[in-house]
Image (cartoon, rainbow over all chains, first blue to last red; front, side, top):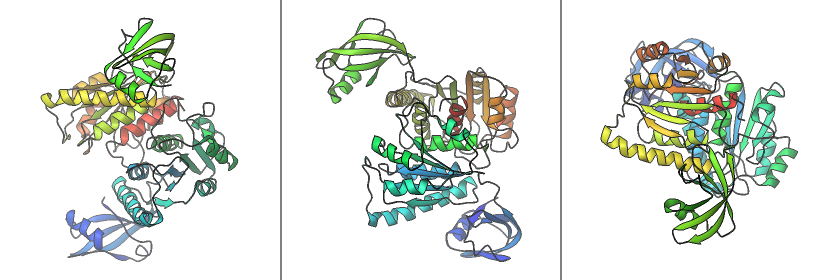
Length: 243
Length: 243
């Protein structure tokens, strides 16, 4: 069933109207009266609706039934990624959304080459959030992951430490595997933190340890900065029984 | 330690000479007499060597010690991917190499939009093999995954069925998870087969079942054709105890 995202408020009533980009999308799909569509608030609630009227620029829908989203993971995974070069963050946002991430958080660390300034950041953040929304729609998610930007590595540590299981991946760690960290105790939320192209500094890894992060390896092969978070996220979803 | 790949034969003696692209690479790195480097045959054997002479276009090395590669996975994973559109296969080859794949095999399926002809394929195959070699070097692998192309879906099924555990991922499969398949019995080799943008046809899935493939889900979210093999590969490596 085709999936549209609207605001939480729009989903409250028994009728709703798709406008703007949603209406454009409906036009491309040639939606007709009587067809069923899925309308989500992007926060986990969904309605099955029937198309009752198709007019230029607006599609009227009648709500048939309501449900909690069935495609959201049982575990909430926040992906913390140090600003990478180029458009790698866009790639990670798209893929992490498909893979079921709950939030994607970008932050600067000492070896980051890319350090977007405040002004360009606002524009980029809008763009990144759109990428997440579009990937959520395509992959059939009931929730659009929030994309956030933090101003410092310290903030990222504080923020990430709020989940049940904050994990940092470090290429010089040999002893502690992700599996060890995941099997220590039950968890409902996880933070997965990875460094930029040049890696995290030893001092930064120490700071994370002090902030409550487990320091884990992702195996003996060196992963690129855009591969590591997606590899870790896939493994966490597998370990959580998602597939 | 910097890693160079040479032929298996070159690795047999007590001395060896880096030429061509290896010599170019050594020049960029400004290798000097007395420095140590790792030389691999790309098939799992490695030598630790000392630079004994640096001349234009050739670097002479003395073999200090030999070892089996320490970065190869305990499980051999073959990634079977239906030809995707654009340069997605290049992306998957690079990432699957980082993630430890043993082989990457491309093949046509009914809904493939991209169907490279014989002539362009030979050139592409060379390019793909180079991408694998470069990713193997960067990620510190001891083995360069072989990239292969098969002529038909039937061939892919026959080829994939040769491993201990051939698995096909299908978005309409709900009951059987990857975990169930992996926990059924011990395995040393796995085939992971995924479809193109439009997915595999039901008939093709039936054929795979008949050829001995387990049909598994990768969860309730729909993954893009370039995301699915990397998600599955990450999960298999995790399940095999790699991290």
